[in-house]
Length: 431
Ligand SMILES: *Cc1c(COP(=O)(O)O)cnc(C)c1O
Ligand SMILES: [Zn+2]
Image 1 (spheres, rainbow, N blue to C red):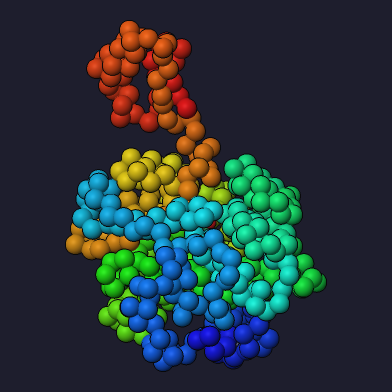
Image 2 (cartoon, helix red, strand yellow):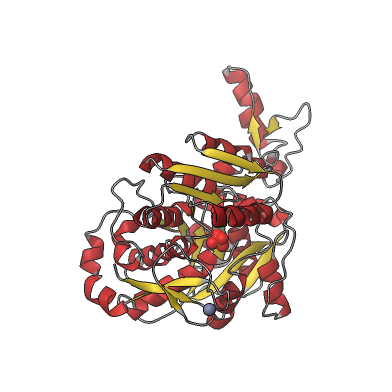
């Protein structure tokens, strides 16, 4: 293993590579520290290229003794050039990192596969998590694949798609009557009492390392270089800080020229404590009560919020927030210009890109990578009622009358209007 120890992010004290997550002295969060000389001598471009087509091709950068025997092969998702989206926003060089293309359709598979592997290496027999939804899907699937017992805790008001896509794997799914912050508090208490590996509590230092692979893949897929700017959704803030760490590590071991992209964060205004702190120029993040359709980002008291702030400020980025309407518009803009259907979190990210472009905070000359972290089929309600279809009798005449003539005639105006306003006699129907 190239990982050497856990290290406190505040005071620098070190700890063994066990299921520890806070510093005993200063209560700072612990992070995995590596022997970069060792990684440098091992991780060549050739070795990575010959690795599996999954995030395990970067195992030299991950805190595990070995790759899992049974695995869902998370990661190595497409990086697609989004020229039509770019043109729409007055930009030129935009890529979408399409992390909907993971085994359970969100980036959480990256963090879960690393956390579960480390938990099994540490001798745990039960895995658990506190989730805003996507983590639940992923822990359940990875537990099923590896035959590990799992307890998954979610807010009771979670989208039905995410409940079903967790329960189907046959895990113990616990709906807690409260918001994510309540669920997380309960899980921290349970973690202190039971010998379970809570992926985002007591094995969080290993879990969060999985997010670095989004930076590694981006660099490899661009031909071993970093983009100028990245736009990343923020819930706890872990993903944002680890994408930054990933690019730094590649520079450290000489796989890319030392260049850290400008890191921009995206939140919903209905749960934007980090964006609010950024706007106010504050060092601390004041907790909020979440109220947004972007449920996967609805963490009112983000554990890594201050570190996300630091990264954005240090790299010259921003943390921006968008309204509920902008989130829905962002989902549709991405779908209509790239063919990628994202859940609400990706609507937030796309809307923030659009907002930054409109404000002149991103430029046509810059290479920008946008992280789309979850699939639209998980949050159908967000766009339900805003789309339209035709419904016809099964004959040619009706097809021509209602669809083709409709196109040429009275529906023309509606084409560009999100409100289909489909009345009784309208040819189009709202979905
Ligand atoms: C969890 C999640 C995030 C952000 O995660 P953090 O690391 O907690 O900031 C982003 N997008 C989706 C879809 C998620 O499920
Ligand atoms: Zn400390």
